[in-house]
Image 1 (cartoon, rainbow, N blue to C red):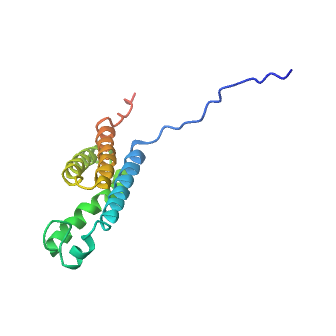
Image 2 (tube, helix red, strand yellow):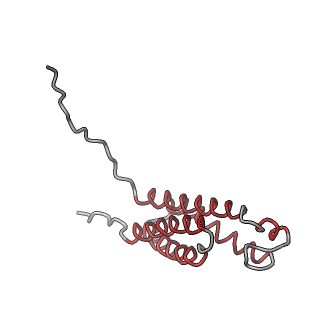
Image 3 (cartoon, helix red, strand yellow):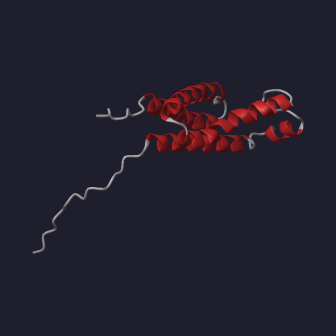
Length: 144
């Protein structure tokens, strides 16, 4: 009679640097924003409103509105790089501020269609994790 011996294999796990975690979270926030904005184009009347010069319910499309939207949408992409490149103290506070600001922005813009709420919940979870990881940034070991 063959008896099967069960062993629990330990899976290897590496500690991931906080900077890489933050960069990954910022990348995911950026992609969720892109997907939500893309799906918004399928809302009835949305493309016609754009062709008529209206900007997503914000009124007429102007250079100022497009510049403001461009700045807001470029920050998560910049944070991917900045989260890896900046020194820890500045990096930590920048991620706390950006994460909190984006959480507030998402809370004000996510309402409406179900897909906006879906992506909003994901984005709020991700930006909250940015703040949480940044707040709990590991301390360097004391030098001896």
